[in-house]
Amino acid sequence: MLYDALAEPDGATPGDLLEAYATELAAALDGADPAAVAAETGVDESVVAAMAAGDADAIAAVRLADAAAVLEREEGVPADDIAYEVRDHVMMEMVTAILDVDTIAAEIDADLTGQEVQQALEGRTRLTLGELAEIQALMIERTP
Image 1 (spheres, rainbow, N blue to C red):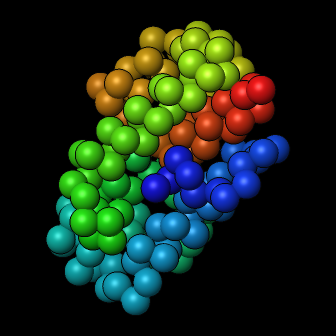
Image 2: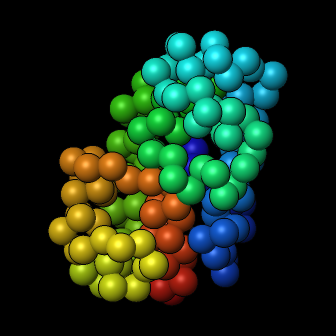
């Protein structure tokens, strides 16, 4: 479920993680009509089409909430619960990696402040899959 999209995450880069997210989302949409999924989930059809195509570059800007809405169809778990589980897993990994939000903000390429990282991880503002990949890659790098 996104946070465990890579079976062997050691040394994973943000690009590796985005590729894994794209593969997971494409598999969840295998054979689905993007227009029908968009109507069902409320996610923009062009976003669903990018996910269905497995386009890692295009999904970098996709919000976690939209990815979760698509995964809800496959997982049978409410989208809010999926997004919560991903954010919760990241926060638990922060403890293992001994990272705080200010360090994350300083170390990733996303133009976020520590407060914005915190708000994104708490679900109070958007978190894109690109930002998630950068945060997760940093944690993988820092976890002993």
